[in-house]
Amino acid sequence: MIKLLPFIVLGLSFSAVASTSRLKDLVTIKGVRENPLIGYGLVIGLNGSGDGGGEITNTSLKKMFQTLGLNPQKEVTSKNVAAVIVTAKLPAFGRQGQHLDVTVSSIGDSSSLAGGTLLVTPLKGGDGQIYAVANGALSIGGLVQGKKMSTTARIPDGGTIEKELEMSFNDKKAIRMALNNPDFTTAARIERTINQELGGKYATASDATTIDVIIPNYYQRKVVELIANIENYKVVADVHAKIVINERTGTLVAGGDIVLKKSAVSHGDLVLEVKGGSEGSGKQAVHLIEQSTTINDLVKALNALGTTPEDLISIFQALKQNGSLLAEIELI
Image 1 (cartoon, helix red, strand yellow):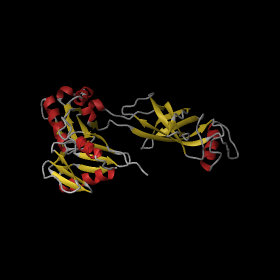
Image 2 (cartoon, one colour; image 1 turned 90 degrees about the vertical axis):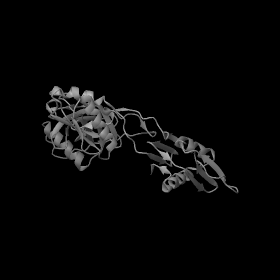
Image 3 (cartoon, one colour; image 1 turned 30 degrees about the vertical axis):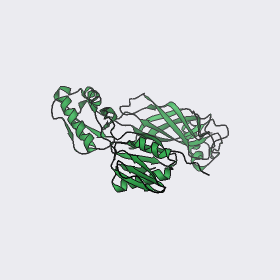
Image 4 (cartoon, rainbow, N blue to C red; image 1 turned 120 degrees about the vertical axis):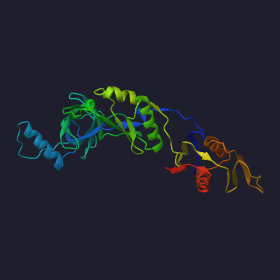
């Protein structure tokens, strides 16, 4: 028999006090982002846990020996070698000589990469150009769900940037910011805040995501200083009223200005009434809930009555369908 756990509530009350957030946590600057890198390489030094052959691995070994001045006439097969895909992220403003963490993943029949060493591997960007090289001893790491993921490994600082992305950031005449969570209200507040702080009409919100900022004359060639100041401006971010329910784990997360209007819901032997109404009749239990009740109080009251997760989901959906619960409901 499956035991149904009471819902755990992680959320806000209906009238949560608005708090400010730094723009640094709300927006990203166009051009300031990581770029994925990828490459193909070989891991050597495995203790018999490599691919043990295969067209890709054998061909790669033969080409490697040819590069080293050897000329094998036959394909080379070894269980101490594995073909791998190497990935990394080129940071914004990455400079030559800067080190990167790289991830190495087996693509052949290797059962384990433990104890292996990655040979020098070029890492390419989306444009096909080489931006970094990677090599070094592999680290398998700890356990994942009680098992070692031995076909995937990391090399801390195993990559070195060889080519920089050209960007004349300090010469920009304007910058573009994008909201991480698009919202018209928040975008308008950001526009107003920036203009008030800079003392002029410099910021324009063109939609729910995009805010363009013209660089003021007194910040010309001091764009880094301008962005540092803008990042620390405080804005009240508007949040959609939303309830997320995870039936498997018994977790309910509520956020935003959730409104619960006067209503009554009958579900099986339970009658839920929000502010007002007459007491029930017969064997049905009547529970009065004030209109100012928080989601937390409501769920606690329902849990105390032995309400199952399925009942709670049905009740919330009924309240929303009736128009009494003004919030979006998402089941995950």
